[in-house]
Image (cartoon, rainbow, N blue to C red; front, side, top):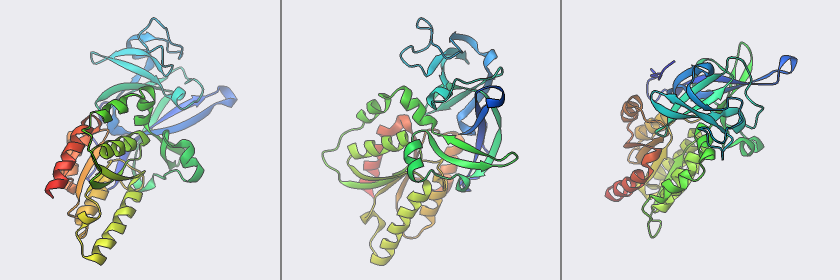
Amino acid sequence: MTGSKILLKAGTNEVELLELYLDEGIGDKLKRGSFGINVAKVKKIIKESDLKNFSGHRSGKLNAGGGGDSANPLVLGMFEFMGTVTPLIDLSGWLRMDQVRGENRMVLVTEFNDLVCAFLVSGVNRIHRISWSELESLQGSMAGFAEGTIIGTVKLTDPDRIMQILDFEQALDDINPSGDSSIVAEVEEAEEKTYTAICADDSRSMRNLVKNSLERGGFEVEAYANGLELWAALEKISSMVEKTGRPVTDFVQLVVSDIEMPGMDGHAVTRRIKENPYLRDLTVYLFSSLITEDLLHKGVSVGADRQYSKPQIASLVKQARLDVESS
């Protein structure tokens, strides 16, 4: 499979997820965990045995003199993909599971946040087209326990199983924890917080990046973990606008929303905002780890004012101040 183009209409709240699995144990003690990733983030699936010019140890033990980052045990090594040196990451290790097992292990080559990297898995199953409303956010103590690893779960049948949707952005942040700090530091710091914004992202690392960057740029920020929570907050603002007759910008000036989120995706949220007579004057930015040409067109079709990816966060904040000041 190479670079899937998702043929989904914007605002339908649907997504295509690739189901992968990780095996632990052997024989009667074999356990298989089912996990999911957005198909749009997957460039290619390769058999481990077909990796070109691999440097490191597929066993998971790094060669200190090899191509892997010996300081980080999650990086198993490096290999060549389309002429580029690509790191191979131990997905099981990041999840604190036993070493990936299986004679026919697979490698998922991914691209998001303008980074190409690969994850070692036991295998892949199939692609599932689901509604984001089918993706259940973690609740209660489980939310605190798994946040930063799992963004939600989907119940699958035939056979019955739970597919856990992983926070791959957080995985990369855990491998390079200083990365986001340097990105936030690029944002021009404001002397005081003058404006108000609300944001939503199911990835903890991405949510914190947006919140911290906007706050540095002079915004008071309320952050939410999914689209349903974001829309609930917007409905309260809509009610206040209706009751007071004041413009919506008296209450909030900016919405920054991820695209793929449990409950309701960013396209669906944006469409609702622009169709709501009390909210439609809000400035809405879509911010995602993946902004393809197809997604750009979808964002425009639902009325998003601007669209950005992670490396553009400083530009997002700078433009946000300009848009808010001119509105």
